[in-house]
Amino acid sequence: MDTWRKQMCLGFPFLLLLCVSNANVVFQVHHKYGGSGRGKEALEDLRAHDSRRHGRMLAAIDLELGGDGSPTSVALYYTKITIGTPPSDYHVQVDTGSDILWVNCKNCDKCPQDSDLHISLNQYDLTASSTGKKIECDQPFCETVFGGLNPNCHAGLDCEYAITYGDGSKTEGYFVRDNLKFDKVSGDLKLSQMNGSIAFGCSVKQSGELGSTSQAVDGIIGFGQANTSILSQLAEAKKVKKVFSHCLDSKNGGGIFAVGEVAHPKVNRTSLIQNQAHYNVYLDAVDVDGHFLELPTGFLGLVATNRRTIIDSGTTLAYLPSDIYQQIVDTMMAKQPGLKIHMVEGQFTCFWYNDNVDNGFPVIKFHFGGSLLLPVYPHSYLFEVRDTEYCIGWQKTEMQTKDGEELTLLGDLALSDKLVLYDLENQTIGWAEYNCSSSISVKDEESGKAYKVTAHDISKGMKIYAFMWCIAPFLMVAQILCL
Image (cartoon, rainbow, N blue to C red; front, side, top):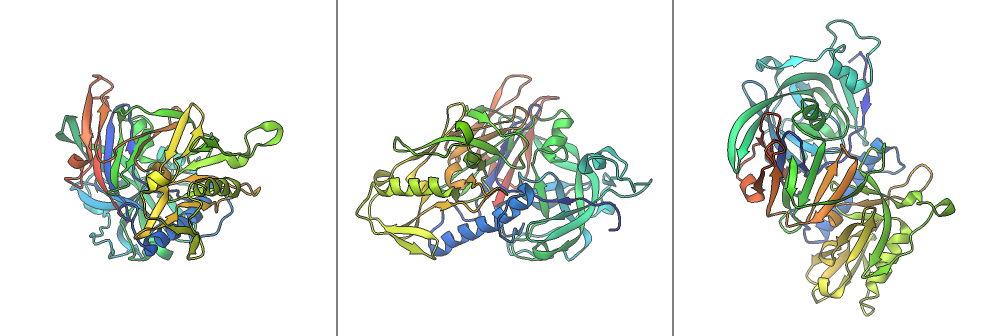
């Protein structure tokens, strides 16, 4: 492509439950590692996944950290969507840190033809869809993507893009608009069909790991905050509010991802830090069985920069500044002074233990504004790599700002078995402990009625389901599988 480009760095993937004003959307998800996993190889995979993912995240938030940032090797979840007329199915990675949907297009250069995920790959054919059309550079969507009109734009010129990932992998193409198909839920488990016109990227060239068959999918669906995301496009059409949630089942590796007003469970919230590429909050306190740790303070007692915490369910473990990490490990291990510590692969602190870990180790609680509490239980932060051998999931942070401040990053280790809600309209985030293999209730704001949706019901198909009442909430349900 010789025309105007913009390099985009995409963020992190995960399973979600999205709350919408005029609609509700729910996805069932399965974790790549099938829950916490067992064996040293599984633990090494988790750590390697996080290292690659953080490199990719840093490309977006401009922090200093190594890592190849491969968009395929870091992907945790994917789902199947239906686009075009006649409809055609595509498997796409779910990514809440990116802001567009893109799929591989017909005759794409170096796009993967096969996937070791045992799924059939597909390439979008604009000429085969009667409802598909290109987006030109002078159209509003293109101006939204690039923050203004391309000075080199002229009539008939495509709206082109190039997305570069942290490892140097790249996808290039142009934007198109076509129908995204949903099954509406008009009541408890009652379905009908609807279409939504969505702008998305048509990838015609790839480089780097994006062309690999390893965990290959057809594209990426972004649920970020920008006006180009699927969520924002639906909100602009007055079909949804910009709110979403996710719930990950630690035992079965599944859960729910949805767009819609959640009536149950109720969630306490805290404010998001403004103008951040990812979901950031300030950490107020940490206690280990009631013993509060000493957290750093900034100038004149103000909140220190390294108390900034990223909430990221695309990360598997949890990463803490060195001072907080050491206090947590020392305090929890003081509960079992007779245990002998050994290292696995030079990076995991491990020990042998014969009893129930929930009875022998403390609950770690993270405190945030608004009296929001995030408890993490021993069965979540201790990984049994083989019979009676456990390794600690807490890790020293890899993430630093340009000023050298260490960041806290809480991943699936801390977020599992909780409904986590992201309210982008009010710039808040919150969570509640929950059985993610059970049901949630979603609300039709126009009628005030709430409808129950269960993970079991969603798992019966790979479709996207939505319930909608005129300008009322809709529920989109799809199965998300792990990469």
